[in-house]
Image (tube, rainbow over all chains, first blue to last red):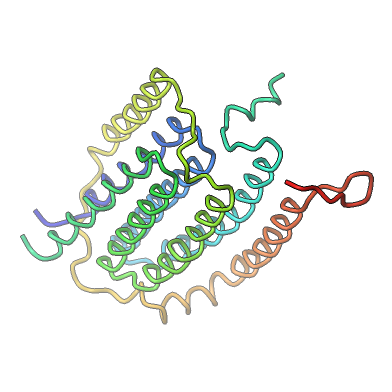
Amino acid sequence: MPINSTHYLFLSLLLFSIGIMGTLMRRNAIIIFMCIELMLNSVNLLLVAFSKMYGDANAQLFVFFIMTVAAAEVAVGLAIIVMMYRKVHSVDINILNRLKH
Amino acid sequence: MDIYSILFWVLSVIAVGSALGVIFSRNPVNSVMFLITTFFAISGHYILMNAQFLAIVNIIVYAGAIMVLFLFVIMLMNLNADVEPQKGQLIQLAGLISGGVLFLVVLAGIKTAGVQMMDPKSTDIGLIANLGRVLFTQYVLPFEISSVLFLSAMIGAIVIGKKEPVHGVYKETNQ
């Protein structure tokens, strides 16, 4: 059975679901951040597969811009995590529920 | 079974296996290593689909820059010791079930998606000459805006990472 776009659809969906599971299961803020990166990458993979399917270069440019935004997001997010670690000496997200009270 | 299929399945198994390793390994450093493996496998998929520019950019930006940033933060905070308190078994099971249910629902949705053959002949749309032409003609404005985004993210990271001033002066603190 030759590889077609449905295979990439399933692979990308599987990676995305693993990212969701990790986000819901872990308490370490850095691991949750890494799972978000995993989800972004699965979407990138799907965009490249569609770009190949339709022979269109626009999707690959979108992947490029997603990578750009992800890099900026990681810089700011890790700065926030470092700041939080400096305040509460932990990266446990359960400590961050103070806005509730 | 041609070489394309074999490579696809091998890369997929590597990607999914190391993605599972990311979420199940106890040590954050191991998670970072597994995530780098996943990114390399995804880069292999890009090469398989003849998107060579994105494959190289994926390796340089993700595996080279972002993951090193993660490693830096983990080692600066000395988190490689296993100190993470675990969530209760119930919460973990709930997360697992929620992710699995999302997988099944979307799977049921895309099961009937039209099967389109990938274009078998090798296309050159993923090569850097073609992508550069499109980027600098059609997407000039987003390109420039993303540079502004980078600048603001850089300034934001510096401002957030700075020690907070206490009554206008920066207090020396021994952390």
